[in-house]
Amino acid sequence: MSKIDLDSFVADAMADMLSKKSEPEVYVPVAAAEEVVEAPAPTVLADGFAAMFGAVPKNIADFQVSQWTDIPECVKWHIPAIDTEYVVQVEEAARLVSGLMDGDKILMTGPTGSGKSSLVKYVCAKLGAPFIRINMSADIESGALFGQ
Image (cartoon, rainbow, N blue to C red; front, top):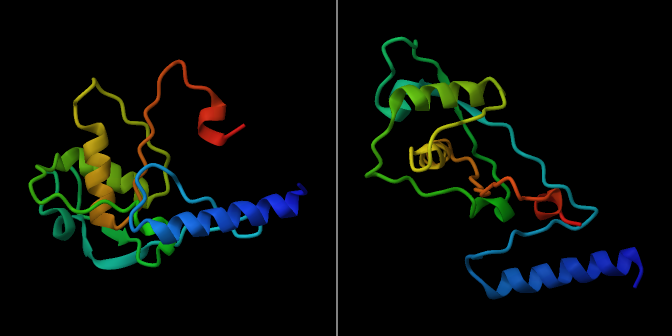
């Protein structure tokens, strides 16, 4: 099977799978070789962090927050629903959102169960950004992340 035939086969198989399931459970849709899904630029809102998250920490001034609005359909199901029961860690959320708005790479550390993933998931829900969680360990190989 040639590369073009294989790309066509994979694209047809993915289209077939997506048409049969309303909400995927485990798989991640893969774009065809010619199709590249680019991340949309966030839209700047008139409101700041305080309006979106309900408060601003004492030591951080309010700042503009952007929200993602033009998300491709194949990515929208990665946007989590807003958890209205979530108690926001305002200082940590402000640091996370500020770093995201500045385009910084962010490393979150802390003990198991301290709320790192749930904070990021909540922030993604508020910003309308996709959230994909990958559990890491010392034994994970690059093939598990990028394919072989």
